[in-house]
Image 1 (cartoon, rainbow, N blue to C red):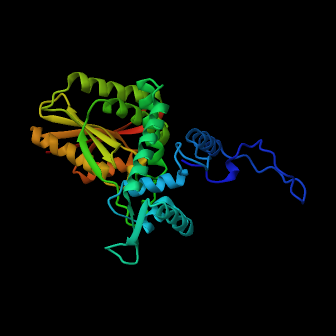
Image 2 (image 1 turned 90 degrees about the horizontal axis):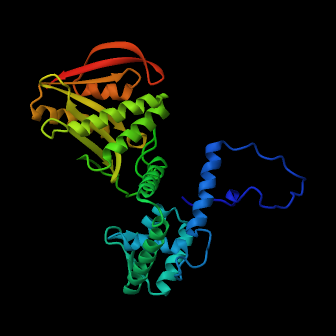
Image 3 (image 1 turned 90 degrees about the vertical axis):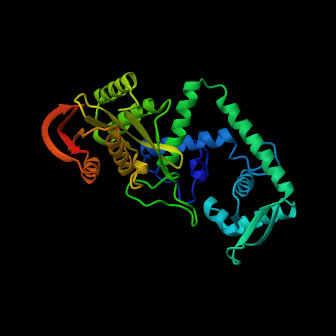
Length: 346
């Protein structure tokens, strides 16, 4: 994230008294707003975003370096694409590209697809400059990560992925459509079976999401951890499977198929879809894949247990052919809930 306005300067920066006398201090910002601005100030200082001179000891500003990166990493790019994807003023971008052209870093010509658009192409000198920037960017990022232990690096990477997903890069915000530049393709949804680290991620994300959305307490995290541990200890690939949904290459959902204990009965467990991925069909794909695996494995029936407050999940189960067979009130995870048993014949 980048600093956007001078108002993100530290609050103790001296300023002149307005001519009409001192103004009343604005009301205090919410804590989450203050924390976001604090992070912006920290990160822009960390990467040198406020230094409008040379970037990474090259003759380019941060904006120029980003434009070179975009041109170098796309097979075809037009000026209009750069303007939209980087939110740059048209006049400013035109002057920047003019400077690149004067330095023989790019050439500009008409797009083959649309003669009204301007195609940008790197010259040999431009490719060398972009390569130098890429090398130094990799070194700079590596120098930040190198001192961290492996566990802390993993935590940091997960946190950065979360920031990108929640603030809109990898999908729509809850209740909204995706906000993408014109011509930008929707991120691809894919499913894969679980690998190292995925089960731990499932415990962490289940605990965090259910606490945030339903107020579940620590006992829910303990339950999920037990389920995951039992799965890992008793795993039999003939009967058990976990799938991870990815959107644009990032983990956004999961589900398990496990033996229920009764002959011929499978159990669907721990369905999870991240808020930013809802609306992309991840939940439907996960449930359908789980049911299909159980059928092909030779199970005759699939069951699941959920709670009535999980309306979106219940709608997925109904669509997949599950039927509600019983429900009863209970107090669990710090909440008064109504538990539900669902089943379907395979």
